[in-house]
Length: 75
Image 1: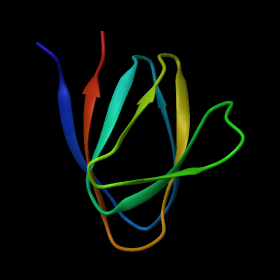
Image 2: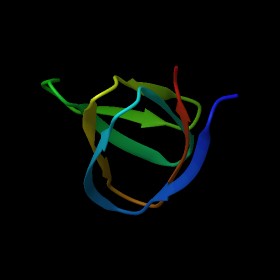
Image 3: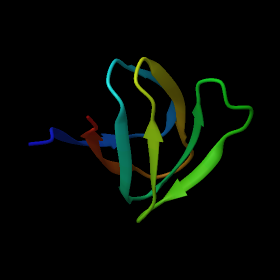
């Protein structure tokens, strides 16, 4: 049984940390993401995902509209 959360991110820049590895699936909208330790932000739109390692975090930026996501906790 995996745990999932649904969420909305409004325009702005945020940083999230996580204890457990997670997968962020983008359901609607677009976001820009930079995982901790990575040099550049990458764009993710509806139908794409990114994985966040355990004990790390990421910066996320929504430039316009609302980004909807499903977060699955891995492992």
